[in-house]
Amino acid sequence: MFGSRAAMRHKDRGIWQSWTWSQQRDQIRDFAIGLTRLGLQKGDRVAIVGANRPRLYWAVCAVQSVGGVPVPVYADAVAEELSYVLTHAGVRFAVVQDQEQVDKLQSFIEQLTVLTAIIYDEPRGLRDYDKHMLHDYADVQEMGRSAQHADKQLATRWEQDIRAGSGEDISIMLYTSGTTGRSKGVMLKAKNAVKAAQDTVAFDKLSEKDSVLAYLPLAWVGDHYLNYAQGYVAGFCVACPESGQTITQDLRELAPTFYFAPPRVFEGLLTSITIRMEDAGRFKQRIYKHYIEVARKHGEAILEGRPVPASARVSYALGEILVYGPLKNVLGLSNIRVAYTAGEAIGSDLFSFFRSLGVNLKQLYGQTEAFLYVTCQKDGEVRSDTVGPPAPNVDIRISEDGEVQFRSPGMFSGYYLEEEKTAETLTEDGYVKTGDAGFFDTDGQLKIIDRAKDVGKLSSGALFAPKYLENMLKFFPNIKEAVAFGNGRDFASAFINIDLQAVGNWAERNNIAYASYQELAGHPLVYKMIAANVEDTNRRLAAEPMMAAAQIKRFLILHKELDADDGELTRTQKVRRAFVAERYAPLINALYEGVSEKYVETEVTYEDGRKGRIAATVKIVDAPVFKAAEPVKEAAE
Image (cartoon, rainbow, N blue to C red; front, side, top):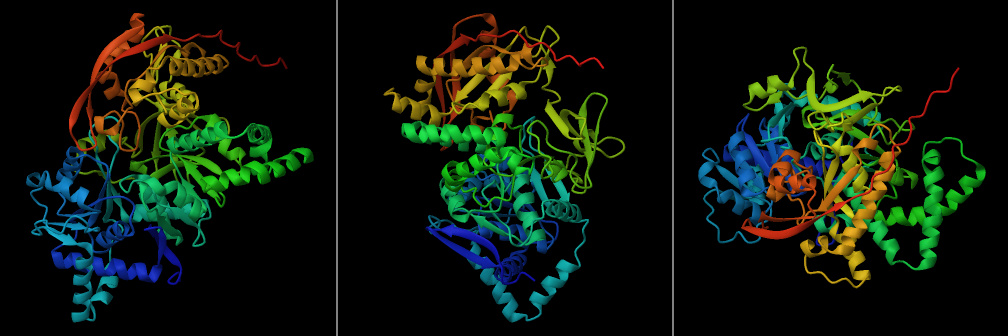
């Protein structure tokens, strides 16, 4: 039905190339048959390693079409991480993007005892490599075409085998981000994946007329669900960027109608907006501030169709011409019909900012084990402090100890080779334990407080929810990451990473010279700037009776950025809290010992895999705290 419509786009050397659904089918079929000629059999695991590229997406589908199990792996995974996943999964084939990925695989090839072939997409730099196990993607496709030429019924049998496939088959194996330990291989059945995608495609009215920019990691459940699964169910066009560095420009050129980004991306967008306005002239700054205030007051109400005074609508319409429209155009959000954010909690101010511009941004709460969606927000019923009601056909309950548990159409069938962990994750009646603490609000929308194991109490007994504090801090463009501490302690404290782009821009405008992140992070004026942000955060916390006792009394700016290569973040950029607490225990102790500085040495991993050490004397600063607001008393009836 969509044969002549665009299914896939890719920007290469500055030019957008397109493939129709019919052309994409041919590409997949040729590669799939070529794989069988290399020896791929039903049930074989196939690693997919690289950035968002049409051929890698086609490889996923090709492997599925002949009964294999694709195992996507993060492109930026270091050799040790890659080795663990490929060895644990027992992959027989690997389809990779380029020389970099080939080199990583070959660095631990002795451990991959069942690997029989590595297929690469981009041949640049591989001409003189030993081709014993290496195959060019194009050559494998040619093998498939030659086989079809020799046997005219081969293509027909390929399609018949697809129709004869069972929905009980494992269609994909996605490894968890490893926030709390070693990654686990989440097995997802074909019928579950399709049913879950059908439900959400109907929920958001996605169709063949929609388009997305696929820039999320192939190994993340968000990409496989939002782009791959929903794309096949709805028939919309999936576009791949030219590179990770051109995503912003590509997004602007493509102007997609459906968009997903984790909170970190929206934080980055707000930072770029702030920087642009700081560099603008006074007149533009006045216009911007005026209409942003109009949007703050009335934008969300207008977006949701709620009553708004006529004068406010006129003012907002002018703002759309002068500020909101041009701003959305620069960000590539002009045509957005539905946008989502997930992965971690997003600050309410940040969330409301984009909605006030007219971007239909919503939140969803999900997990790999659910095949993403557990909750999602309905149009017109969007709140910044909740993640919405249960997604279609999803059942959610809150356990006695406050843990969120669910059953869903896309629910996983287990962890690969880890039956004990599967049993630990499931309740006796078949619900998945999320490990997150939450509760339902009066209107049936779910509120996530934090990871259940991370929510604690100060020594006074007051609630301590670190993620809540961290999100408030990260609303400030100067702060890229924050890690809060305080469970069992007398007060809350925090590590802070500055945003090098935002603070670096500020430093240049103020003629402050610096040679590295470490030097800028330790600058007295930077500490003064961050101290103001922390003070503002405490003032807002004081207005919330439940959180007022968790105001941040002491903080420090880390001498290095938290990095996934150093194990401090997952590949989806979530803080590995336990690892950070263990690694920087001396700094945490210093926060509570009352000292004003602490000397530390930290091992770092460079991009080429080499190890090194950086040393610094980190300053520790006290922050003012404010009297808690009195709880609002119910009026007597």
